[in-house]
Amino acid sequence: MAVYTDISDEELDDLLARYDVGEVLSCKGIAEGVENSNFLLHTEAGYYILTLYEKRVNRDDLPFFLGLMEHLAAKGFVSPTPVPTREGKTLTEAAGRPAAIIQFLEGRSIKRITPDHCQKLGQTLARLHVTAGDFTLTRRNTLSIDGWRPLFESCFQDGRIPAIPPAEADEIAAELAHLEQNWPTDLPSGVIHADLFPDNIFFLKETVSGVIDYYFACNDFLAYDLAICLNAWCFENDGSFNITKARRLLNGYQSVRQLTDRELEALPLLCQGAALRFYLTRLYDWINQVEGALVKPKDPGEYLKKIRFHKDVASVVAYGFDLDRA
Ligand SMILES: Nc1ncnc2c1ncn2[C@@H]1O[C@H](COP(=O)(O)OP(=O)(O)O)[C@@H](O)[C@H]1O
Ligand SMILES: N[C@@H](CCOP(=O)(O)O)C(=O)O
Figure 1 (cartoon, rainbow, N blue to C red):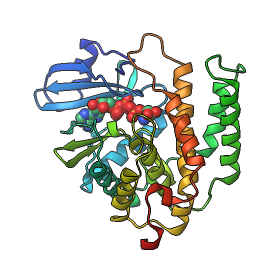
Figure 2: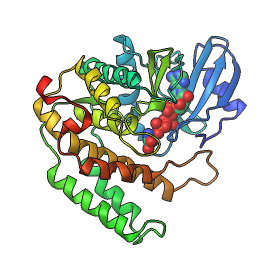
Figure 3: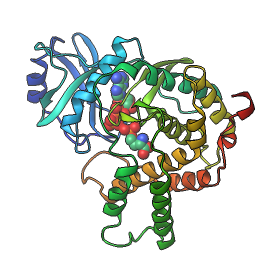
């Protein structure tokens, strides 16, 4: 459960006095998420999500995230839209933190992922890329290639981490150096979600009803977003790669936005990079656990196995992509 900051009744009343949503009926901490404190807020006007933004979210980035949600929702994409205060602001403060009230979306995240879900994920991801194509604000990806070395060094700053075997630390160091030398520079770019894991997409029956959690969104290679999804959706619990899910994910994406030859060629490397990114952030969070916070750290080891898998991939054919039919 991610609730780092609690909100008192007085603070909540003070917050809601700025909005046109009536009186609070209830406000409960939400048992998912790892980044921010989230509450299911029930008021006389309906249900909302109250988010208090925490340490890893830079306050200066909030207009980008909230503006992106507004932009996507206004263009018919399944994003929640932030609720404005009476003064028309989507960003405010509560309990000493930057805060926003966001539209509540119906639907549930998927626990048992099927290839059909992956196809719909691919279509949705490509629609997000296309719909955000004319969003005018920009945000550099601080968790892409330039951000990995500082993260790696902050994890290993006191030398070895006792629970990490020296060989694993050396393997990660070599992987990082390899990616730094070979990372592409000129792929099609735009706004990406950058964290489209299964918990961030809602389905109602078999239809995608919502995409949430834009707090890593940024400008980067569009295909890097696909690489994040290949990692997050196409491996089974036993660590094996499901090529059918990957094929459907790529097909779903291509049905909305055609991948270029250079993107296809770069995909195995982008997948290695995406796996290293989540390995490093999970390792960082595991080392730097916040005392008293209701949050369960995620396992970096899962992503070590994924890095190793992608290192052995020679081309997108290993992801189920049929180069002859492309
Ligand atoms: N707009 C929304 N509609 C419905 N539920 C939401 C919405 N936004 C967040 N949630 C719920 O809150 C949880 C945590 O939100 P998320 O944005 O993933 O948090 P974090 O940024 O901390 O990772 C989600 O898993 C979901 O259950
Ligand atoms: N998806 C990331 C962690 C961020 O979690 P979220 O709850 O904000 O989606 C991971 O799995 O490492």
